[in-house]
Image (cartoon, rainbow, N blue to C red; front, side, top):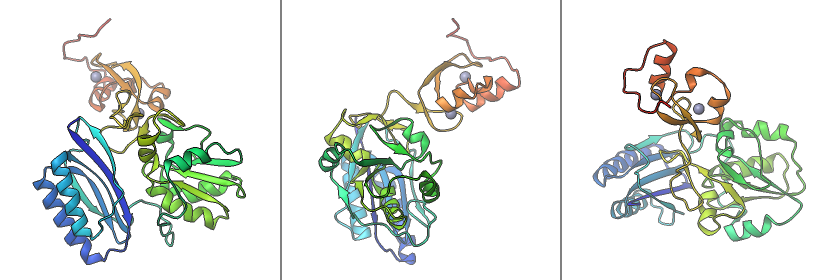
Length: 301
Ligand SMILES: [Zn+2]
Ligand SMILES: [Zn+2]
């Protein structure tokens, strides 16, 4: 586990001209420190996951603090044997988390629950626990008793929440991967009349640090090469990336073309299409054309 993967965000007003300058500086320093990852910059703030060797990543985080003028980021760290990204990318976006609801500014830590407060509130009876992540994330792991909205993407939240008809008078406990989505969701929920909404500070990633193998079941989907992290925040060994759709693949199959043992996702498996029973898009392509595989076929049973 020689790499460290660090996620953090902050809602803060950046000026447009500053974004370009920041982007150039973050890219240059990232390459120098051999750090990889994805950083989103916008006039509403910064959202980043970066990875590198310990010394390099510390240098880089200090540099980001200097450039942004923010020295109290809330870092969520996890170890990894792989860097989890190919290279460093810094993108300037409209929003640091796509919500497509103008006027929904973030909540700035309003109604945050620390993991231990969250844990004790979970024991109350009259609560709704709401997972606001996408359906393919929920599939990999979620909190006990949690409801979800079956989202394909976060921008569907407002509309799906409205039609879900959840109880508005009782406490609602929101969570997501690292907390950023909750900051926008909580404002929208208040707008829709929810009386008492709380969010899990730092999301599942922060919670698992203090409470592994408790109320969160399964693994936590992440948007990088690890696909998911386990209860100890280590890269998943259960899941790989589905070669056909990019979701978490945990279903063992043998490739219909090259006969290699591989994994695909539940969704693709459920489609019962022969060509999806393959280990790569390339194998799927050749299988559909009826080509014979020219590789040595080791795994034939
Ligand atoms: Zn798939
Ligand atoms: Zn194959």
